[in-house]
Each structure stands twice: as C-alpha cells, then as structure tokens.
Image (tube, rainbow, N blue to C red):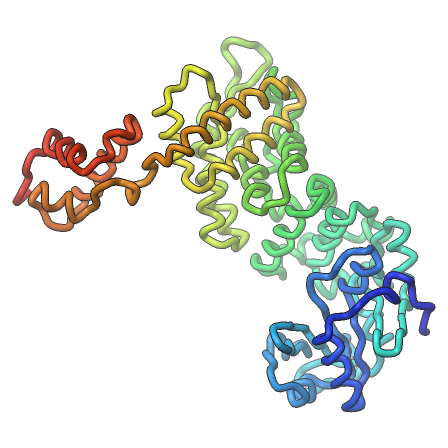
Length: 458
C-alpha cells in the first residue's frame, strides 16, 4: 500500500547518479526503490551516508544494465553499481521463500521484501521518480515514537540472522530509542545461536558502530542485560560490582561505561576507554593503607596486552589494536609540576602521534570517576599546556628525528648491520630526550664514542 509521502522525503534532492541508476532500471522495465537506512535517516532529518536500492531485476540483469559493477554479494542478490565516483548497492527483492535462481532466494514484490527485513524502521521504501512511499510495517510511526520493533515475529527475524539482536542494541545506542517489549524479550533466546553462527568480523563491525554512537553506554547495557556482552566481551563483566577506592564513585564496570559516554566518537579512543581498566579485576588487592578500598597496581601494563588481544579477536585492524594497546598502557599517568621537561618529552616519545588521543582517553577516564573531577581535569590541562609548549620547540622524539642515522652509527663504531646499531640509536635518543641541545651530529658522535668506543669486529 502506497502511503502519503512525508515532507522529509518530498524535500529530498537525490544525487544525480542515484537518479540515473533508478532511471536505468525503470527504463529496462524493472521496479526500483530506495530502501533501508537511507529512507530511515532521511525521515530523521539526517543526510544518508550510503544508498541501497531494491529491485525486481535479477543480479545478472542488473550487471548487464550498467557499465561498471562489482559483484559484492551476488550470492545474496547484491551488485554494487559504480557511477562517476558514486556507488550504490542494488539488491534483488529477496526472502527465504518463493523461488530460487542458482541458489538465490527471491520474491516477486517490494512488499514481500520489506516483510523480511530486520526492524520496522528499516522496512520502508521510497521511489523519488514517482514520489511514492511504502511503509507496510508501520516503520514511520515507530520512528516518530522512538521505538525499535522487529518486523513481524522477532523470533523469526532473529533466527534468520542471530546478529540482529546486537544490531538492535547498536540502533538503540545510535538513536537513543527504546526496544519494543516483545522484541527485547526475544533477544536472550538467541545468544547461543549468535555465539555459534556469527563470524567475529561481523561482531567487530557491529561493535565498532555501536561504540561510535551517541549513546554507547546504553547500547552496552542492553548487550549485558540480554546476555550478549558475556559472549562478546566477557572481560568487562569481571569488573561488575568490583569496588575501587575513594577516587571512584562507581565499580569498575560502571566507571568504564560512564567514561565511554564521555569520550569523543573516535573508534580508537572509545576502544581504549572501553578497555583501559580491563585488567583491574586481575590485579586487584586490598589497600593496606585504607581498609575497605582496593588497589590495582600495574593494571595498565598487563591490561594493554589484553586490550590488544581483544581488539584482534574482534578482527579490528592491527594498526588499531597497536594504538589501543599504547593508549591503555599510558593512560594511568599522574602528572605533577615536579616533572622535568625531559620527563614530559619521554612521555611524548612513548605515545608518539597518539598524544591527542591519550588526552581524550584520560579526560574520559576522569569524567567517569564521579568524584574530584575538576581538580583532575585541571591537572590534565596543566600537562597538556606544558606538553604543547615543548612540542612547539620541535624536539626529537623518535629515532628518525636524530641528527645522525644508522649509517653514521656503523661508520663511527666500525660495525656492520646488527642489533647493536638499534641499541646505539636508542641510547642516543634517550640522551636527546634528556637534553634536546645534544641533537647535533658532532655531539651525537662524541656520545657514541664515549659510550661504545670502537667495537669493530664485535
């Protein structure tokens, strides 16, 4: 049934390339609708980041109609059409019934296709060529009410793809919406299927989207209460109910979630915040000075390695895992004015290009304390100001910044390529971090000779 077109869709100006794709399909005698997240986002007044088109044309037919296509998901009826730098996924109406073509299950109508989608807010379609809007599942009403509801039977939708309950938590985190009662009640029953059937790559992708959403704490709590967090990140639950000390109002778990909400929507920062205290449960010990309180000495060191392993388990890029490890390892600093400039430079050298992200992690950590936040933030601002003043002097912070390199080291020491070269360069960097004026070729050569002499043949 065609509904009256909402104002947000009538005012939408589709990209020229998208209209060309829709028009080409229609000229060839096929239906073509914008579907899914793009329609939902337009109705929310947000600009879509991508567009999906649904059509009755079969994948091979779609590929024939366009000059440049990528068969991204042809086994599931999806072809990506490329038009002048614009890309759009075109998918044949599909469902788990009707008839099959080379193993693909298709249906005949857009209404049947929409009836098999995950949530009502994603089961709307719009045809900008003829200004037609389809909403057979009541998605617009749910969207206006801030409600996330499974299409038809929640059990049937979750059985089709056990990742959908996690997607529900992700949408709740993104839009701040409530999950409809029957939909939410159906979620826990599919935890075992989720663990058994869903690939780590898909889990990581959903978690990445949840973490950079406006309400990540809300989404994480939904995962915990429905049983999915115990599968995805059981390490976090070890902090539930674990009391800290006078500096923290909350237990480890709730501190982490409050810090997560306070962090900027940067995936690396939010991963680091999520995992910054991951090893507190394994390093906890009763305080000898303050009865009833706990200490967590060294949690940042062991936790950094554990955080990296978790990132890799969820199939995040190695570069992301490495930076998260570095941020977790360095987050537990306590700055005082007694720090020397060299101490600040050494910290900058350890954290490298991640200094700004480290500040964000630390700021979020402080905002998750629930106590003494302003004093701690003042302390952080003092460190930031001092570090930035030092950075303006452009000090050498990494080995490539040194005035001499490996070749000169080998010449001075009379050695060939060996681990000794790296050791010598690290020694020189330590000297330069202590005093930047030492970063002159003559001074560095003198320091080398004083420490090593000539070790030719060694």
